[in-house]
Length: 227
Length: 222
Image (cartoon, rainbow over all chains, first blue to last red; front, side):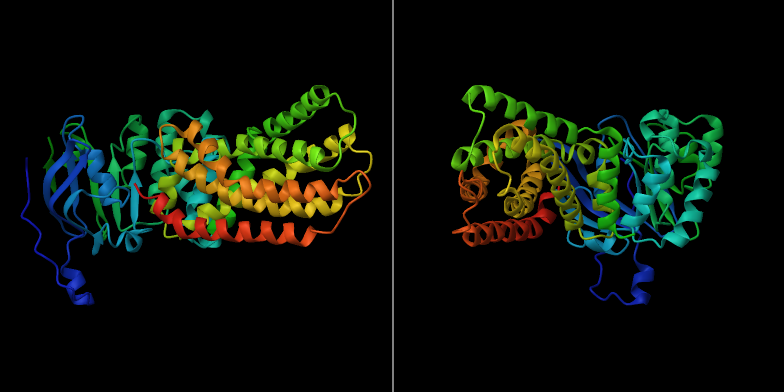
């Protein structure tokens, strides 16, 4: 397993100067068990703000579990987890709204249209309607889905759903992007369109899960290999 | 738009678009009335028998909607959407309970006139009984939303919801049927204990709304 240096224990002082020194993601001996089975056996990781990390490994190596823990969707069984200065799971409430999460399955209601799904997500994030409506239209245009924006999600192909789900993940301009195989189901044209939307940089940190080395690892600052 | 309005609007829009719950609830209620009409071999009902047919029929029809309440959240990632958003998670409880109150009210707007047509000689007790039903709807929605959430997290969800829910609804059924017995009496509505039943239903609603508010956040944890 490829590992980075362990995270230093954080000071209780949360001043802006100290926050600037905090990693975007800090893991020390992160463990997650499901009953008798251990999905994550103890992962150490330190990711600085703005960095891009590729997480690779075979099926069942705990990649998706790691992403769900970092998003605050799953409790760790042990270890220290710090994401954007929040100690998880204790401070999950402070993390909400700051992470863009793309999972295995799209977080989209099948009987709503892409435009309605994005509107719902914007409302849940408390985004101002006047600001968000032009952004939704711009995102739909960027991923080439304007013409199908009022169809039901159930009527779209897997690749189209993936495009809309990526729009949902970046809609609220999160500080941290957690992407589980963002290229899945996408054709080369869609990949080209979506690459700028999910890029790291400008203070945005990115963690991308993939089965294998390739485009994802080439674009990453470093690679975490699980399993 | 607030998160509450967005979630409630989503549920109502999906129901209008798919008609998955309301037609099934209405059809169940009407079918039950037909079975009671022939099963009891009575053309008119009043008092405790009228309330005993109407209230449980509405309750069992409500179970159809309660069982489906969180299907989309479980299968389409709605729980994760709320967990990721910077909102108080009880907003989902409030939106789901409100949607259920609306479904139940629509069901009653269809089923109660049909019940009156089938069984009642006089409809004079139905107006005050509507107030009883409205309070019963709030209690049923609060309890139903809470139990539906618990059941959704379990593998035995179809079995669990009615098994846990029905015993919890006994006080609500006693109050609604008790009020119905007097309001649907053969010789016209009797308001003698109307206030008592209203108070009991109001207390039930308050308790389960508070329990839902206090516990829903924990139920959404993994």
